[in-house]
Image 1 (cartoon, one colour):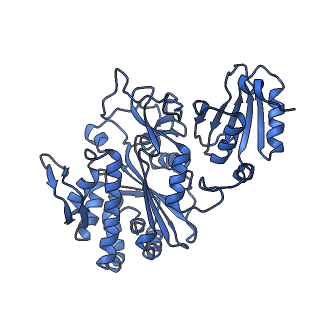
Image 2 (cartoon, helix red, strand yellow; image 1 turned 90 degrees about the vertical axis):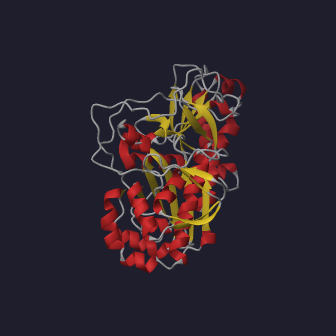
Image 3 (cartoon, one colour; image 1 turned 60 degrees about the vertical axis):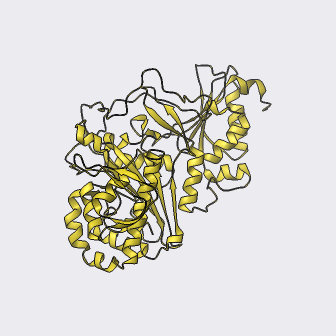
Length: 452
C-alpha cells in the first residue's frame, strides 16, 4: 500500500523533488493581490498558442511584501477510524539554486487511507494548475507555499480537490535518499531508456530498461526527471511508481518490524529534513493500519491532460486550466468516496442540490428591477437556500454563475435552469466567502424567463 508512505513521519518516502529545507525562511501573508484570471472551460476560448512575448520557464522572484509570516493551518486531527488524508510536498529546487526567495512547491501528492474499508489512494497535483489561493488571488498552485508555507498550500488544495486534509509533510532530498538507502535501495521496472541527473555537476547518466534496484540518489534522480514523456504528468507517474516500489520493498523483505524498532532513531536523524504536523506516535499508529491495506486496494491517479486545458495567465505564464467537475470525479475514483454527493452520484437534480446545502446569492444585472425577488423566490420553492439578493449598477447581457467552494450539482442545476454558456461560468474558489455560489442575472434571463 502506498500508504506505507504515511507511516514514517509522513515523509521518509514521500518527497521526490525537494532540497535541504531551512525553515528559518519566512512566508507571506500580507501580499499584493495577483492579477485575477477567470479561466473559462470551453476550449475554443482558451489560448492554445503562446502570446508573442512569453515568460521563459525559469524561476521568477515573487514580490516581497512589507511583512512576511508563515501560516499555520488549523487542521482536524485524525481520530483513528475515519478516512485520513495527507498532503506531501517538496520545494522547487530552482528557487534554492537561484536564490530567488521563498520556495514554491514543485510537487504535491495527496495520500488518503480508509482504515475501515482498508483502501488507499494516491493523487498527484500538477504544479502549474491555476488555482484560487486564499488571500492571494489566482496563481499557479505551486506558489501557495511561497506565499504562506505548507499552511496556505493545505488551504488551497482543500479548495481545489474538495476534501479535508489532516496532515502535511515537506521532505527534502537528504531525507529521501537516506531512507531509500536504509532499505537497501528500491526495486523498479524501468520501462524505457531514460536520462537522469543525480545531484551535483556533470553526473548525467542513463538508466536502461528492465528491473533493477536503485540506491536513493538514483531513485531521486529518476523521480525528478521531467524531460521525458509528457513532462510533469510523466514525472508524477514515476513518482508514484517509486512510492509503490518503496511499499513493495518494505513488505516483500519484511522490513516493517525493523523500521518500527528504529523509528525513534530515524525520526531524530531525519527530522531536520522534514517539516510535518504529525507526531511520531501518530506515524506509528498509521503504520499499523497502513500495513493492512492490500496493493489491489490502492488507487492511483494523476491530474493530467484529461482534467486540464493548456492556457496562459495574464502575465504570459504557461498554466493548466482545471476542469473542476472532472477533477472531482477523479478524486472520487481515487478516494473511493461512495457518498451521495460524489460527482459520480445519480439522482434527481433538485435532491442533489438540496443535499449539497449550497448557500446562493442572487444578484440582478438586468434592467428588470423585479427579477431578483421573483428568481430568488422560485429557487427557494425548489429547495435552494438563497441567503442574499442584490441589485447591481452594472448591466450584464448574459447570466453568469460564480462557484466559490465547489458545488457540482448546484452548478449543474443552475446551468440548466438559466441556460448558461460555459463562457459565463467562473470557478473562483475562496476561503471564508459569505456565499457558496453567486448567480448574476443578465438581460438574457430577463427576456426569456416566465417566472410569476
